[in-house]
Amino acid sequence: MPDPRSDRELLAAHIAGQAGAFDEIVRRYAERLWLLAYRTLDHREDAADAVQDTFVSALRSAPRYRGESEVSTWLHRIVVNACLDRIRRRRRRATEPLAGHDLPAPRDGIDDHLTRLTVADALATLPDDQRMAVVLVDVHGFSIPETAAILGVREGTIKSRCHRARRRLAGLLGHLQPAAPAHRGNARAPDDVQPTTDATTSDGTGGGS
Amino acid sequence: MTTDDGPDLPSLPDTATREALERTRADLAAHGARTPAMPPGLLADVDAALARERAAEAAPPPVRRTPIVGRVLAVVLAAAAAAVLVVTWVTSGPALPPAPTAAPPAPTAPEVPVLAAGDGPAGLRAALGRSDYGPLADAGRLGGCLAAHGVAAGVRPIGARQVVVDGREGVLLVLPTGVAARFRLLVVEPGCAAGAPLTVSDTLVGR
Image 1 (cartoon, rainbow over the protein chains, first blue to last red):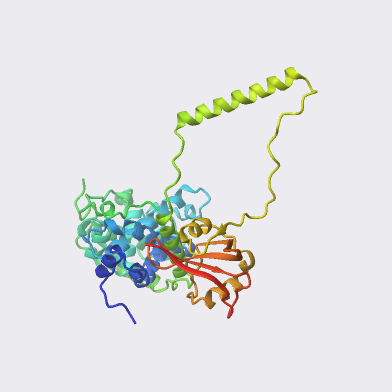
Image 2 (cartoon, rainbow over the protein chains, first blue to last red):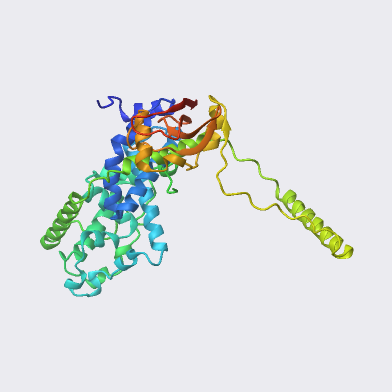
């Protein structure tokens, strides 16, 4: 029989020392966090490790949870950071196949048939901020406000990142002809703005694992 | 600094671009729909990781290390003592018995702690983080033994060690309870198996 308590009630019970409360949170969110981790990393073992690290990190930081965001948002924020950690580690490893994803964009004039990639390959070429935004919104189905809360930036920033990501993906997937030369170099145009909160660290959801 | 909407966000994309972006979003949604289901062992792995984390929280703090100055001094004194021994041996000649050497390494059989029944903290210290399953090293046998004690499938010990408890040989298994810093210490006879619990002791330790 499902536990009728809300996520917040469960987390509060866990912090108060009640047996099994955190385990119920794990049962509720493991599948959802797995889906996001896999969609972000496209790698079973890495995604499984990211989920495991997420719950360990959440267990450690639970006493510092201040309830400023929903438990769901808090957990998704932790798994996003865990995924980003792994993406950065992959990049540091020269032998990682991810290096092979670093193909030129269609706007560089490569023939379409050479630049048609799978969705996973195409996502892997995106800058981290665009990739996370478009995965959360278009692949995972989060709303713009939910995504903004998870990533700790403004909604407008999410829209911008998604738009840039979609344009680049459209080219990589063969849906869009190469852009005019005037657009060259815009793929990495800085779109970072000030985070709306410092919740990514204040709630103990930093990227460390 | 750019605005939130970014510098290259067109307000009115042309029809072809709009369609391309829609096809892209459809591809992304389809990509999401192809995500495989969560691996069946992932929850058990998460449980085990959480148990290790809880065990680490419950473990006593590490022994305070000697300050660096003390360690340097110890090294210097040891070197001086070795030098004195060498000089003594050289000046005294080979008629003297050889300088004492370190004892030969002990046989590699694992040390078996002797415990008193009910001494949970000592048992926890002895077994936590170890994997000395002895006669229960076979996964099937271990699983049967755990099941005989009502341990849910998928729950793995977070420590195991061959022990002697009140004179009886056994295997001590540290099991997670789902509560931080609380563990179930199960000691079973070597013949423990499915349907034969052969319990020596079964205690809870921790807060």
